[in-house]
Image 1 (spheres, rainbow, N blue to C red):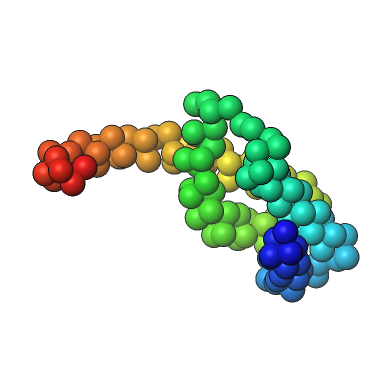
Image 2 (image 1 turned 180 degrees about the vertical axis):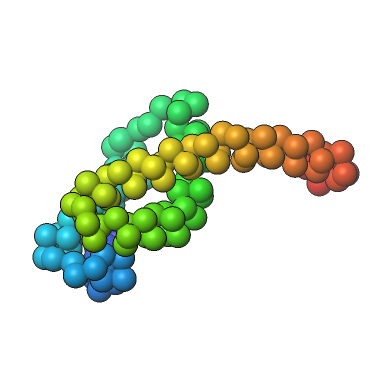
Length: 135
């Protein structure tokens, strides 16, 4: 448990320290919000890991898992660029929510229309190319 607290503390410190690289002129409120999000996610993951919270498998959960990598790639590039451009003239929280929905939607499209189709083709290719004892 001590390691988890140290990890969470380091995560919060690092996030608060680097927030100015993502938000122009971050306020104390921005830093508190980031800290609350990190604490909430850590509580969620700890609850799942200790089986105090169980998640029933579903197609939606599989899709959400498949979308994590496209979200990771898209939010760092497209999301940050859009946020920097749009938040100068608009409310940054509205911009953040809009961009979040946009990135999630785009990630779903990438997962559905590209990754799922390519995964099937790559699987077939590997199955035919590799000896069965390696699969």
